[in-house]
Structure formats: C-alpha cells, structure tokens
Length: 336
Length: 295
Image 1 (tube, rainbow over the protein chains, first blue to last red):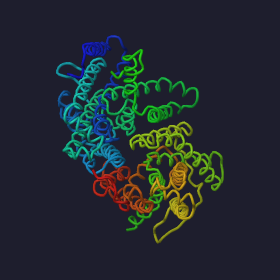
Image 2 (cartoon, one colour):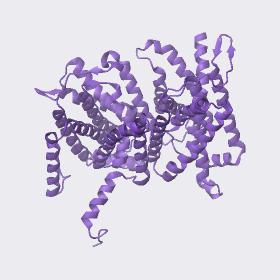
Image 3 (cartoon, each protein chain N blue to C red):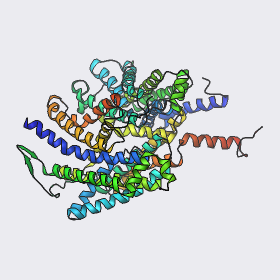
Image 4 (cartoon, rainbow over the protein chains, first blue to last red):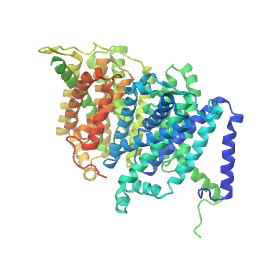
C-alpha cells in the first residue's frame, strides 16, 4: 500500500471513503443512480486505461467486451441459477478470454489497424449475442433475478451502490498497483517504444495479451454490474458509441494515469447529467430533436477541445494546481 | 442461377458506391496520413442535403448536385481548418479520436437539422432501365454506378494532369521534398478534405436516392473501412476493386445465408468479419504497399 505516502494522504483517503459510503444516507435515489453509473464507468475506463493508456493498444470495442462479461454472468444467473457472487467473476473471466481472442491481431498490427480490429470486435460480439437467441434472448433481451449475495438482497439502490463503490475502490487500488508491477512497467515500455521493449527482453506477445486480458476483465466486471443493475440484459445497453465514449473519458481524464481514468469517467458522466437537465429545456425552446443532438455535439466538442487545448487531460491540470499550491508563493521549484 | 446473377449485379452497383466512399478515405490518408473515421458521416450529411435541395427546395437534379458539392467544399474547408490543422503532428490516436468526435458532431448536426427522421426521395433521380437477359438492373443502382465511374474518372484525371493533383500525389510520396519545392502542404491537406467531403456527399445522394436518407447512412462509412483494408489503405485502385468485391460478397452471403440464421442481418456484420480476416492474414490488403509496421 505504498501508494499512499503520508499520514495526510491516508487521512484524505479514509475521509473520502467514509464520505462515499455515507452517500446513501443523504442523497436521493436519483443521485445514487448517477453515482452507481459513474462507478461502473470508472471500472470500465480503468481497464481501458491499462490497455490503451499504459500498454498503448487502442481499443474501440470496450463496450463489446463489457457485453461479453455482462451476458456471461446474466446467462449463468438466469439459465443455470448460479448465484450472483459466483457469476460476476465468471463474467469477468469470459470477457478476459474474449479480450485475448480479439487481442491476437494486436501481435501483428497497431495504430489504426488495431482500432479497426477492435471496432470489428464490437460488432461481431453484439451480432453473435443476438444470434445466440436461445441462450441470450437475442434482440428481445433476457430478464434476470434480482442480484443477491447470500441472504442480502441487492435490490435497493443503496445496497447496489455499496457493491459498485466497493468494487470501484478495489478496482482503483488494484489498477494503481498493477502498473507498479513488472507487468505494468513492461506495458509502459511497450507503449513508449515496442522495438526497444522487445530488445530489452520484454515478450511483446505475452505482455500485450496480458494487457488485453486485464483490460477486458475490468470491462467484464463493469458489464456484469451494468446488466444486474437493470436486472435485464439487452444489447442496447452496450451501444457502439459507448466504446467511443470510454476512450473519450480516457482522453478527457488523461491517458496513462489511474487518477485520470477516474477523473475522465466522472467528468463525462457529469456532462451526461448536464445534458439530460439542459436537453429538455432546449428541446422545448428550439426543436424536439435538440436534446438528442445536444448530447452528440457536446460530447464531440468536448473531446476535440481537450485534444487541441489540453491533450494531457484533467489529470495533468490537477497536478499543475497541486504544484501551484505546494510551491506558493513561488512559481517553480528551486534548484537547491 | 438468375438469383445468383441478380445478387452479383446488385452487389456490383452497391460496391461502386462503397468504392466511391472509400476513395475519399484513401485520398485523405495518402495526403495527410489521417485516418478519417468521419467519412461515413459525410455520406449521412450528403443524403440529407440531397433531400433538402431536391425536395424541400425543389431544385432540378443538376442544380441540387451543384449546391450539394458547393456545401461539401465549404464543409471540407471548415473541418480541415478548425479541427485537423491544430492537430498537425499529434499522435495517431489524438487525430483518430478527433475524427471520431467530428463524426459525432456531424451526427448531432444531422439530428438537429433534419430530426434524425427517415426522408425518402425516390424517383427524383433520373431513371434508366437496363435488362441483361432476365436480370433487371434497378435504375437507381445504375445511376449510382454511372456517377461513381464518372467521379472516379474525374479524380484520375485530376491526379494525372492538374497541378494540385500532382502536388497531392507528391505529398503522399514525400512531405519534406514537397515543402522544399514550395508547395504548401496545408493547401494540399485542405484540398484532400474537400475531395473527401465531395465524394462522401455524392455517395450520400446516390444512396439516398435508392433507399432514402436516414441515420443509418453513416454506417456505410464502417463498410468503407472494410473496403479500404481489403484493397490496401494506400491504393485508390485497390479501393475500387475491393469495393466491388465486398459489395458482391455481401449480397451473395446475405442472400444465401440469411435464411439459415435466426437473427439474420449478416449483411451488417459481414464487412467486419472480412476486416478481421484481412487484418490477421494480409494487413496490407490486396494492393497496398507491403510496408505496414510489423510488431
């Protein structure tokens, strides 16, 4: 746990966790829903961050891998009666294996070609799910029993919020630590220069697939949580644009930083909420379709603005602000 | 047999439109090394522009085409200047994300301006009927075929004989040399975006004339990627051949296999299956230069 270096940091972390777990006491169900969705997005983006931000393997199929995880746990729960706590890790594992399969092209290709391969992965996964009609319910969806762990039913918003937040915190700590291991450092080396990494004895084959596996396990957990939240599995919960937004969250937050992944997911989800508040007003004032177009245009604009003006994301800005206060009243560190 | 030939002919005409859209993609890629994910959304905008000019304003077909091309030129200029110019020299991912964001913005604009509704305008394009034996060629497909061939021919002439065309080919070859002989690279980039917008919009009007304009038109862009990968990302000729191959394959596969599958919809996912196979076994495509970075 050396990621928290001082007593003050420990204090802040404990206070934040206490606040987080106190949320259901003060907030309405609506806000809890928003926070739960944020938590799920954070888990998903943490995985994408390991894959794209640290290992440099760009994936625009993340929602597809979430669908694999989600549907695996859904089918286990609904058809085989497997309890929720056992189905969740199975879903994660299935997503990881799907990631390994679709990660295979990454051994040969990179950049744009890998992007195309992962986009194709998304569409092939969703199509396969619809084709397996008998198992997954196809386009009609699949109703699920309410999730429960042992005798504790997770049907209330507050209970589910606790579960998601616990997993989000766990996921964040694990992600933060993964990048400090041998594998994590290998990912960074591959991202920065794959040829140099290979020369140094890093097996590209093994570590790229590991990155795909870890990233997709996170996606699988997020997908399972999403499906069980609604107690209903449907391919509409994993639209292609979500795959794009997860990458967008990573860009807004700052690639290659765990805190950035969290910032980005929270920031874009807040933007979503803003759009759902402003949208109806705009629709009433301008045209009925204004709300839908506002959602698309605002997301597109925010990504372009970040790419042009703040390419290192919110995380970088946050570090600058922290440095400003640490060094105040001086503007930069001394050379002593 | 007639069924098979009918599928082949329809696929051929459809494939020419794919090829037209894919060419826009290849031109941008060759000149400025930008992978333009928004190419399908140019088609979307084109489909709706066709509706506006032909139905809402009631213009004759030639005037409507002229207006649509003029709008496409303006669109291309704005996009290049506002989004791509500031990102010159940024990493691949940043530029690709910018074009994805551009695609969403265009989708949002289409939603705002045309309400994301289905807008039909069949019968407004001129009709030609042609029958080869028992196989009827649908008039709209034939028009699409003729216009696509015409566009490709014009582009070929542009690249061979005009100054800007030569400059574009030179830029594709070597940027530094081009700059040292005094050709403005930014002009070349702007022109390549304009051409991409124009061919996208023309493709949109052609497809809109066949099946009406709706938000699904943007998906043609995803098919164009499969075409581009199959043909080789840096080959205009490859894009044409691959477009036709993919159009035919898709129609034949859907025609024969869809009745066997419960959910159907193979035509939608078929390009992606082709894409994965091409990426695994022949990432430089059929006609691309074999210089893709191997890892």
